[in-house]
Length: 459
Ligand code: UDX
Ligand code: ADP
Image 1 (cartoon, rainbow, N blue to C red):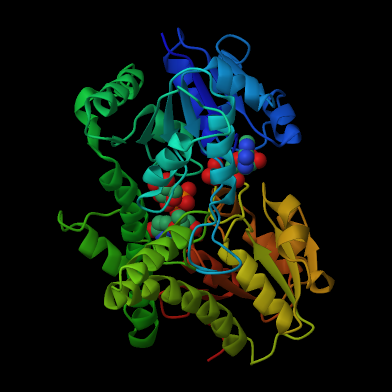
Image 2: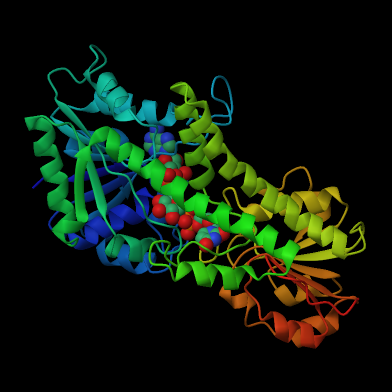
């Protein structure tokens, strides 16, 4: 039975390996990372990421067949199947800056695998990567010199589709598992190894096998389509605000069309997270590389609209609050890019807080999980920002509440108490259409929800 190594103990590598260890108790699964603090956290009860149900799964397997370590060399030597899930952020320098994937961590990992391998390996791409990266990895692994002599490497693409906040459920019960491999006898054998692992708990008909490039492109395409739905419904929300239609009613009506379906039709402050923007820009770069300027422009528009939606949210706040928020206290409810995660990568709340700070507002940010990231994410405008774990204190003396994250706990707050503690007129800008707008209006709030006409006492 082949043992498993995963290089990169992040949001993807950690939960995915924990689930494999849970479902394949006969296999030893080791997760390694260069970041020793992260590994220490994985070995404690304070895991480095917040994910409902994750701690239970880790506790069931850790020390049994799931191990976290910083010894990357030994891991490579001792294991036969190596998942690579190191980070591949958007490049911030040189060609393709702001668009292409930064592959430096990924290439370092490829070279390390080659350097340390003494027996044949199956290398599995788990990070989201540009199409044809597997070929580049195969070339690095096959190049002469720097170790790896006589060792055969077979590179597979096995993109991860889990969403944060529901990672454990998504891993336990995936819509599909995708395995891309070379269409050669060796490639087929490697694909069969990986399929055997997933077959331990995923029905065989949900495991798709494709060529490597289709697999890589499917991941980028899935994220681009999901993000495009969010930008599409947000564009309709702008039209609803202008015309008096209600975007939630429109979403419900179109979502009942079985060809469209009801998911991913929630208008809000725009999408965030580490994947959507990065993957679309990656797709844009890929299109541009092949001279497909119209296709590139089409996908770029999805990101451009997302930025516009965040600017629009702040403009609406400004307009409603008599065109100035200077010196006013604004309670920003939510900092994570969505609920049930502490992750703030590309969170709309960051852009919103920055724009409000530029307008000289005093922003009190409250969030049940993401406050530790505020200082890092809002560097440069911290004079205008305070972190406040208690939402009641965040709202105390504020002129408005701006909801940026759909945390359910915000719904259960005592808004009569909050209203009493705020400066009047008091406003709510619900950027996630999370709260009970009629009830807030009855309490005295002026309520502005995305894609809806305002409920205001000021006319
Ligand atoms: C996404 C993909 O769903 C997942 O398959 C992929 O592996 C990684 O990227 P994730 O970034 O964790 O997962 O979050 P997701 O639930 O997809 O939400 C992304 C963003 O879109 C969030 O900011 C969310 O608030 C927003 N969103 C989602 C909306 O604004 N409206 C919706 O209807 C759905
Ligand atoms: P993702 O959301 O894709 O999982 P993360 O940033 O959460 O991304 O995790 C990526 C992990 O990969 C980080 O913990 C980082 O320390 C690790 N990493 C990056 N480069 C290397 C490397 N060369 N060797 C081992 N681990 C690495």
